[in-house]
Amino acid sequence: MRSPVNPLPVSSEAARSLDAIVSGELFDQVAYFFDALVDQREKLSLGGVQVFDVKDPFLSGKICAGLAHLLVNADCDAPELARRLQGYRAVMHFTASMDTASWGIYYAVAGLYALQKAGLLEAAVSPQTLESLRVRCDWRRFVNSSDYTLIGLPTNYYGVAFSIARLRMLLGWEDASASEALLDKTLQHYATHSGPFGFCDDTDGEGRFDRYSILLIAEICERFIETGLPVTPHLRDLLRNAVDVVLKLGNTQGDGFCFGRSLGPYGDTAMLQILAVAAHLDVLSAEERPYAYSLSVRIVEKYISFWFNADTHSVDMWDQGRRVDAYRGKSRILGENLSLLHQIISANQLWIHAGFQGVAPHTAAQLQTWLNTTQAPFSLVPFATGTYDRSLAIYRDRGRVFSLLMVNGGHSQHMNSPYYPLPFSPGVVEGIADSGPAFAQLMPKLTLQDGTQLMGTAFFKDIRSASQGNTHRVHYRMDTMTRLGGNAPIEDERLSVDVEYVFEPGKITRTERFTPKLPVQVRCVALAYLSFSSGPAPEGCNVRFHTGAVTAFQSVGFDICETTVLDNATAFRSPNGPMHTHVQCLRDSFVATEPFTVQWTIHYT
Image 1 (cartoon, rainbow, N blue to C red):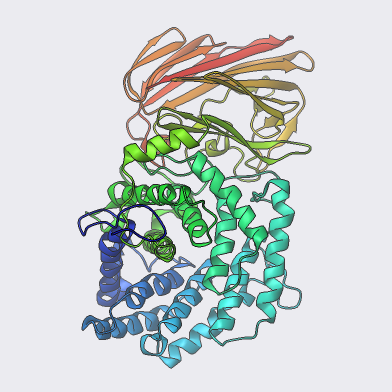
Image 2 (image 1 turned 45 degrees about the vertical axis):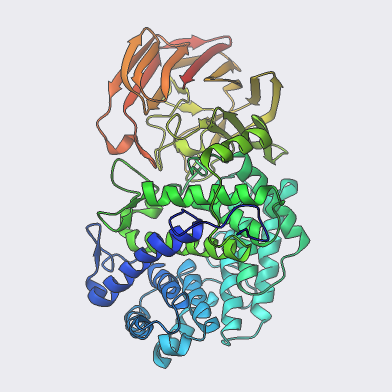
């Protein structure tokens, strides 16, 4: 039997369709949390964390939305439904008084609206609890009701406020006036900060583009779908831009975005969400749909096989040598589980609506063949142009995908390696959340005689690319360097730099030519490579590795390179696991009177 909307055969019970995974392992996990909350309530412990001892402002809302899936998707005649309703009612009673904010409020009203649509709200939530939630779950807690300006939050929270106001209206708690005003604010924000290319700056014009810049349009469209608003042709066009990036990054391992902040499983599920919303809105072509679905299945398979730890009944972003931003610290373990489950279950519902319930995905070999055929080996995606350029270069090589990010990390992030201009790829080059510049991954760090430290990380100009055969080049310049030490990047005019990347099969070379404006005393030039490969064999300024994806590292422009075997130290953990070798290259003191060059090359399988 075949689905009328795609050519893939409907799977048997044993096949790993997306719906089979979600209705199996993921709903089992929701049920586990449901029972644990009912039984243990405020005493619940997960992964060694007393989850209610930590004041997570989003947790009560995530509980409301996450557990609601179990009720909404239950068979109405199932004998356990009455028990589930009673348990949900009890959980909502003890969580309703918890402090909640912004995203937590959104999750709460979304969960309540889902129950209302299913005809279960009155049975699942007592009148007293519902009244308490009506008062507490209000967009006015972080928005001025007089002029709809945000209270101490960045402008991307307009979308959260709109969603809350719209859902409150659908719950019968207020009229449509606020949601209409906040929708205008949301769309104005997107237009102001996305520019001609359709990707949203995550700051007020500093030039920070990351996972969320590409995901945000899908979130906006999904809020429209969730609350019954028509998605305009313009929004669909913007969503198509995001889809194009996701397909360029597509792979058979289920890997998602690997640059910027807030990664871990969220880097993967962001791509899942974009593809699911696009499928629901018919933004994908007929040819793309089954392959986008297959990519989605790979992402969820990775969630089950890699991110989920069956021993702890939890997603694992914090142990086994993994590290994520402090924002997603282990103290929020229950909330992170519930938000990821909510995101994946919601994506599955969109794919079901698109006609893919029970549909078998393409095999990995079929998916890889399609990606090789349809996605260019190299592409340059512009984010912004003007005083400074911001772009993403994507290089595909024999199943590996590299993302060369060229943006300004901006305040609080410019010094952290996930925002460096590096060719990120899992297992080859990765950043470290909240790293700071102490071990600047693959970036020459210049320390001047006066103690100033400089790197070329923020002020990109004239980004351009050229391809010839299997060789692809990216060039940019910076007329000023970034002075480290401040919350925001500071321009330093004492040196400029020209940078060229050369991508070839199995090999990436970066060459930097620094030019002093006037003679400058350089105390040292340092460069670190934090590698997942093991068994280093240094020879001069080159290193060969015995095992790992990277087989060799070569450098030019240094006096010495030394290697250190790492032992799962916190400072050297990526979202995907620990680095194993630290290569440290140094050039000693010199006076820069003329241009000087620093170069490194990575060889990989």
